[in-house]
Amino acid sequence: MNTRMICHTQKYEEVFNKALRKMDINDRELLNEGAVPATGYTAPDVMSRKFYAMLAKDDLFRRFGTVVSSGNTSGTIIAAASEGEAEWLGENEFTAEISDSISRFKVSYGKLSSMVRLKDSFVSDNMFDVEGYLSSIFARRFGRAEEDGFLNGDGTSEKPEGILKSAAVTAVTEGASITYQDIKKLYRSLGRKYRANAAFVVSDDTAIDLRELKSDSGAFLWNGDNDTIFGRPVVTSQFMPDASASGNKAVLLADISYYWIVEREPLSIKVLRELYSSQNMTGYVGTVRLYGKMTQPEAAAVLTIK
Image (cartoon, rainbow, N blue to C red; front, side, top):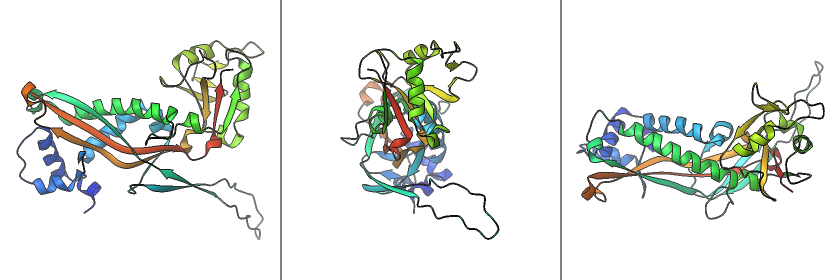
């Protein structure tokens, strides 16, 4: 039976919750159906939905990127991109055939993991929501780690390939600081078909600098009413390089929907029953296996400080 199907059942959630609280489990066979080798047990559906909803708050790629699931332990992923257009035709006319682009990229899944400890007095208290607490903690930690990796990952040692590394379009500032002309050059450097759904991504410090820029006519570049530049939304990330040093990729403009997050294994939890028993505590290790890559590198442009 499919593991994901089992994790949707109420009975599985009940035995999983008992495992978290170190209670005796009558249906051990059912719990083992959700076992993930070396990483514990797959989180039940309710916990998983809470986790991924909170994860999106701490990872901009979860909000703007494309998430796909894959059962393959290694190999390649096939990504298709349709670049065709609709046409107005006469009654007896037929549209020309457009060849969609098909790309294949190698997947090397990384294991993202974190540990939480809880006092046994909380674990045994039925009024304390252990599942909710772990979902929140792991979502916050994993969200930060994912966003950093999806921005800056080097694509080696099972780390994702960050969008700053793979961006095919580059621009360089005219001087040591960012100007209005630099942002305009960056915007125009990205293909028109990618601008419609593109967003600017900058650090908090760079965002402050951009808010002060004015166009040649004296109007502010940044629209404070809706936080946009040239009509495109601006998103901040603590993991974006700022504009303080030469060579830093300080501004990203990209259609992030072309960034694929490929999930091999969803959240699983391993309960460390004995390791911290002398401290009257229980340890929990959360783990996910995934990979990330920009499937259309030309859909991303970066501005580098000269």
